[in-house]
Amino acid sequence: MRVAHGTFLAAFSLLALVQAKCYEPTVAHPLPEYDAAHPILRNAFAHIKALLTIAVQAPEYATNSFSVQVTSSKESLWAHHHTARERNASRPDIPEVNGDALYRIASITKAFTVLGILQLHAAGNLSLEDPIDKFFEGLRGERSGSIPWGDITLRSLASQLSGIPREFAQSDMINAPSGLTPEDYGLPPVSRKGLLECDEYSPDYEKACTADDLIRTITAREPLFAPNQQSTYSNVAFELLGLVISNVTNQTYDAYINEAIFKPLHMSKSTLKTPPDSAGVIPSGPEYWDVDEGVQAPTGGIFSSSSDLSKFLRYVLTHYNGITTSANWILPASPGRGVRSYYGMPWEIFHTDRVLLNSQRAVRFVTKGGGLPGYSSIIIILPEYDLGITILVGGPPALFERLQEIVTTELVRAAEQLAILQLQQRYLGTFISPDPSLNSSLVLTADHRGLVLEKFISNSSDVMGTLFPQFFGPDRAKNMYFPLVPTLLYRDEKKQKGERWRFVYADKRTDAEPEVWDDFCPDNIDLLQYAGKPFNELVLWEGPNGIINDIQLTGFRANLTRIIVGADSEGRENLEL
Image (cartoon, rainbow, N blue to C red):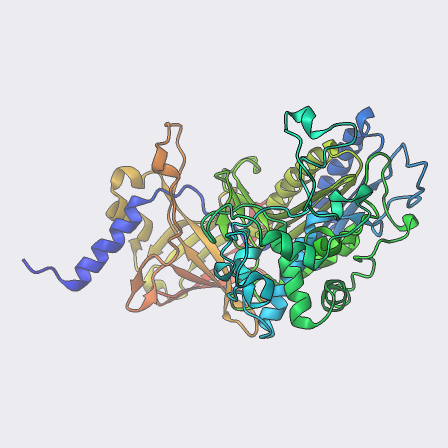
């Protein structure tokens, strides 16, 4: 029997739909709009401040100072600073911690190094696909190590996929902490002949390592993995990228970062040179304030403040998909060891469904953390919420994780609450065709699931009642719904008018024990076509009041108009008079 071509394709499409169970879409709302004076945010920030104040009162945190700042892509929304109760008597630092107080931000520096590489790629001065040995003769030809430098690209280095060692001048057990010897750890005595004489190999880190020290040492090393085989954290990768920046621009790394990033972003306090003590946080106890990192500066040498890092985060939030067409800067590049953890360029990315109170939808945290003796730091980007967070801590690191847990969970929950309220006020309503002969209408609701197509009648046909049972069978169809996914694109991109959304399918969670593969949900946004037009696209047009008044159903070739004007501050529908 001959099967019609169109029938085969339709059957194939339906099979793809039926196989996946998707409970809630990852993106459930457009970017929220923020006003720091809004009651939801005002209450959230007051609650966060109270929790932080209580947390830092513990006696073990007496020597800790910290700065926390929250920004949207447009402006800083909130900041809180704490000055240690017990100060560094031998080195008086900034009298009172504020938004300009400088901390060593350690590995957050890597984000600036990668930005420099992306800028040079966009300018055509290098390519992310260039092999690293293109830039250094010392990585070519005969060498005692076996790292395949010609197979390692700049993209691999930036993405923690190079497979090369983590360090070249640190973390050597021969340089045992003060008061201990390698023999105390059961290690045999060995000669120091041929070892480096810089960084931790020099007394009190007094001598910084050079590019020659780096190249000479790493060309004698062995790889951990083949290039692009598996992610593994490497500081050396970013030291090499910093040297590439210097090589290509004929500038020092310090000069390039200052001219190409700090100055354009008005990060006036940030620097790679050791600031005066009075400008920064210098905790009592072990600290790394004025250690010259030399060739290792591109992996951890920047001093910055919470206010300056908020400026950087605003840049990332508005440019991450526009620096170069070769990369969306905040997307994962490789998986980490944990099932919810990924590496980016150079981000550590975390997906979790444990944050939201009444939803198991995953939240994405794009982070870059850093740590040096005396300093713990992190910047966090929440792209689906248009938020950036900076947490900088001076003193013992134990306080850092507590601050991170408080700030992120409380802030995300408040942002989610605000986003859903804005959905209700702007989108919720009933829409009908102005042509009564069509008998076409739909109802949009908004709750913890996001914007949902609650009811859809087209040409007198119940689309949901027909579509679900046909595709998925009547039993499964009983527990399904139509959430809407914002594409953040517009029908009229120039005027930013006509929001383009797609409705997709989702399964309602039940009390039954889920099966292993129930969590397997590949994205399937472009469901079906109808005569060459997307079947599941809705184009939402706002009226002069800022509320969505008209909906264009692309595949159905129909236009619907609101008969309900949104919701009040509590999310209740208001009938149009």
